[in-house]
Image (cartoon, rainbow over all chains, first blue to last red; front, side, top):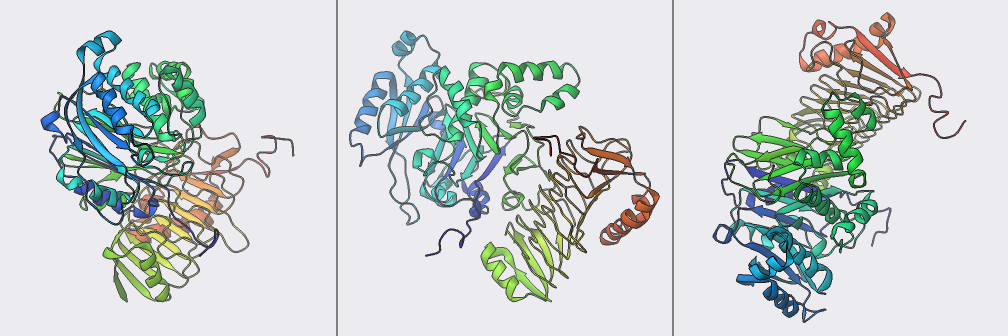
Length: 373
Length: 244
């Protein structure tokens, strides 16, 4: 067997996104083909997808996707379901359909629940519906051993696991779903061993993040965000990015552009040269949320109800390519992943460092937690 | 001439085939994201249709020529030491990363960090020519060789490079077409109009090579003056961390 130094594994994570501005529903096939081209960026220790608009029949309910580690924690499901019944109406529950394939093994038990908060519970808590739901999801992850909520938004879902992304996509039978927006991730875990829950996308409510990179501000960001009732249970940087965006955008009410200006803030020298009033606004954000500046290499695709946002770090240490073709918007770590599904795309380009590229539906009725304000 | 259909090949299969065919004239069709194409090959001509993957022509050797009909991705010509790469399109980030020799011609634009840490030694003198504009950190840590940016996609008065051009530069030269001052130039980089002898001996030969490769009239490329960026001394960073 070759030892270190004799073998090179050319990995480095891959992300991809496809979006239909008119809300046309696409099967998961295209996004699987797109991410599959970048196979060599992953190492088989994680792949995942987020699809939006996939549960139209249950659009009013939060779709909780859960992993249960049944072998290690046989009571996890029972405990979790008891918790869910105490806090939510459960309108529908069942296993998430999967396909047995040799590439995907040792999967946990994977369940799905469509739920709404019990009015009396929510009223007592004095929280709004989203905050109540988000806190319950975070509480399950922190307190019920062996249970992990990996998706919890309305009319959307995360599907992820250990394996190459194209195999994970087949495992979850994503060709049977129809969504107007898809994101995908192929993983090469750097600081953690790679577990089903740690695969991307990370989600809270309808916001999901796929991430290529390794942020160096992880612990500084984590310490700050944990003061606001978030608990980072998995030690991965993508989890903390997800909570930062949720905090800035949903809780503080910053626009997506302002959120991007906080996490990928321009250099002070660049800020000084900006014309007013941008200069004052940007300096205010830089000072007000200095603990949420994310440093180190990253490129992310944020998925939310009705849109996507592509964002890279302030130095642009990770590649990212985007392009439009008719109704569709495409984004990927490499141009080839876009060409794989849209060979005739006229123009692709790379966003600048820290420059958010935001795409939303033409129809304005989308109003999820992450929808542009 | 040998044609390879890369449609169903991964980077290892394609690389194996290319190494067996070293020294030949090769055409790659339906290329899509395969990395390291032409890596380390000498005296080999490769013409590519499609989108080659990252690190195209890495460690490319003497006498080789790679022509891309389309865009190149990131780290094109990584540490190439000879030969030439011609891109009929744009290049991604870090084009010419650590180049040690040879020539790279990019018809359109390059992403961030083009020409990062290019170096020269003896006869080995790398040259990178970008027809459009370059992103931030052009020539970062530049140690040798020459970078020429023509800015054909920019109006007069707009610099053809992004911010922080030449950060950490301690050798080599960057020539920019036009007289617009690049934004946020580091203090260790000295900017001057290119001297007439530099125009004649260093800029025009590269301009002619670019014009020939892409069929552009050379006169169109020299209608503006050129700026030259160089380190401001032999040891520009001596006070940066410690006195040395």
